[in-house]
Image 1 (tube, rainbow, N blue to C red):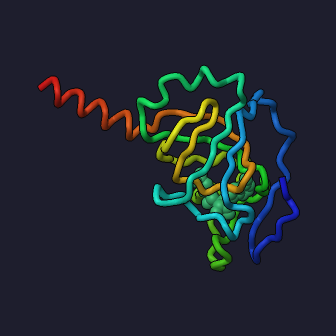
Image 2: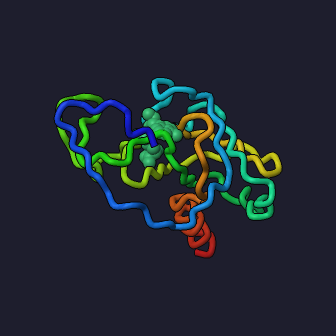
Image 3: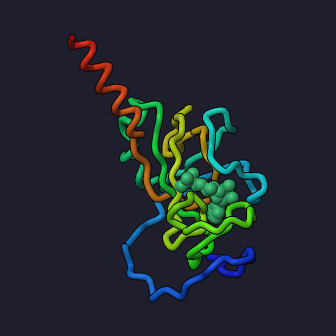
Length: 161
Ligand code: SAM
């Protein structure tokens, strides 16, 4: 979105063809205490603050069974990112790296992912810990975390001997 964010020395940009439409829908908004990039951690941690994942009310039935897992993977749209950077200088280090070798929010499709701990469900709202996004970030998807699934499967196999 904000192509005007300042470039660091040596960073390259690209003029891409118009976007095809993937028919993505924002399925909710993420409420965090992080109002500016400076407030945001670079990656979330389970020790971080409670954040609220506010799903569109019509989608509430799609949360059925969510409490069966305590770790979730969230996908969100980093809506205040640049989308034209080919190379970037992480934290202004001077070293230039290709966008796809980084987890920078600035990328052609600025999708962020975090594994979060589910603290509580309040109807269509999930209270989670482990996020690193700005307040109001649009939500794209919610899935049980892969590691949680793998741990459960292993525990189940062990139980069955
Ligand atoms: N955990 C995600 C991942 O690995 O895909 C995102 C990592 S990215 C390094 C996190 C940083 O993106 C934050 O520290 C903040 O500077 C920035 N950020 C957070 N929310 C954003 C938003 N809505 N738009 C643009 N940048 C955002």
